[in-house]
Each structure stands twice: as C-alpha cells, then as structure tokens.
Image 1 (cartoon, rainbow, N blue to C red):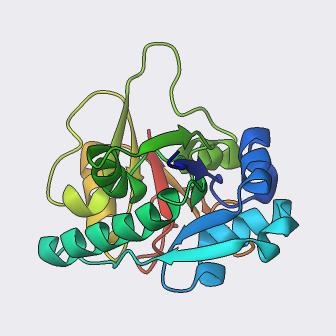
Image 2 (image 1 turned 180 degrees about the vertical axis):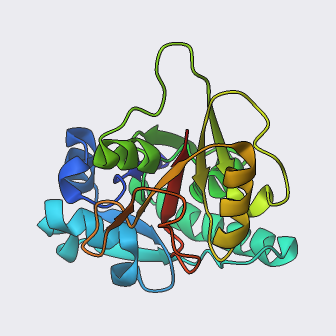
Length: 225
C-alpha cells in the first residue's frame, strides 16, 4: 500500500487559528514535509509547532521550492520534490505537507500535486483559514456585503492593469511593487487597508492607502473597497 499526502493549511500566522483537523493529522503522521531548505526555519513550521509541540520530534523533510520565475528551474525543483515525497509514500508512509493559509490559494504544493497525481499517488487538501479572511477580521471589516463581488489578485502579475471591475479587491503578493499597487488603487477611486504579517509577532496594520509604506514586506495583504 502506498502512502498518502495531506496538504494542510496552518492558517495565516496565529497558531490559535489552526483547525482541529490540522492539529489531529499533524499529531498522527510521522513524516512532515515543509517548503524550504531548512524545515524549522519555515514559517509553516514556526506557526504549527506552537499548537503542536510534538512537531519537534517528527521526521521533518525539506522540500526546496526556489523563489524564481525561471520556469525551467521551477520545473526541475518540482520534479525533485515530488520524487522525494514519492520515496516515502512508496514505503507505505503517509505524509503531511504544511503550508501557510489555505492550500487552495496560491499554494506551491499544487505543482507537486499535479506530478504526484499523474504518477498515481493520492493527495488530499485540508483547508485552513485564508490570509485575506484573517486580515479582514483583524481590520474588523467585511470583505463584501450583500451583492458586492470580490476579486482576488496576485499583485506581481497584474501591475499596470486597472481595477476595472465593480466590487472589492483583495490584493496579494505585493512584494516590492507596493508603489505601483497603491497607484492602481488610487486610480480606481478605492480606499485600501492593509495587514502585514497577519497574526504574527511583527504584525502591522494600516488604515488607509497613504499610510501603507512602499517597502512593505512579502506577506502584505490589501483589501481595497
């Protein structure tokens, strides 16, 4: 019998936002996969270990996922990662891949999942609280009301575009492009609020577009209404 991979969302940063199902599965499984070169340095590990201290005694496996747009480098990394995971599954051992937020939203595991499923291995997503829902709760605002639509954008891939559709926007992955993102928001006539590092010790909250610094960190999430 081959093992199975559970891709578990550990939430945005606050360990108390981890689901009971996530905690149970992490406790039950011995193989814990983490996206990065050093498992204990990953954000997903640092979140989860606060709610599941048993993680320190698990077999932690690093799955290197380089931060690059070079498709050839990414393709090779995904293949190597999948092969490493398969080496454990072939021994009949289940594994948990930990990811921040929810595994269905811009999760690197989905690239591995495609390969694993094609190779005949079973995978399952375990939902976690998304960063934008946690950020809206932190801001104490609804993302949408009544008939308002919601648009979710990865900023780095939408620079220069207009926020042309009616409704409210969730803007993720702003990275080093915050100045351009703020220009997009202002030109649309919307007002933005932002949470950086939501639920983490260095969390920062900004209540207007003008307050948002241009040098915001990678985990900066904007809600523009």
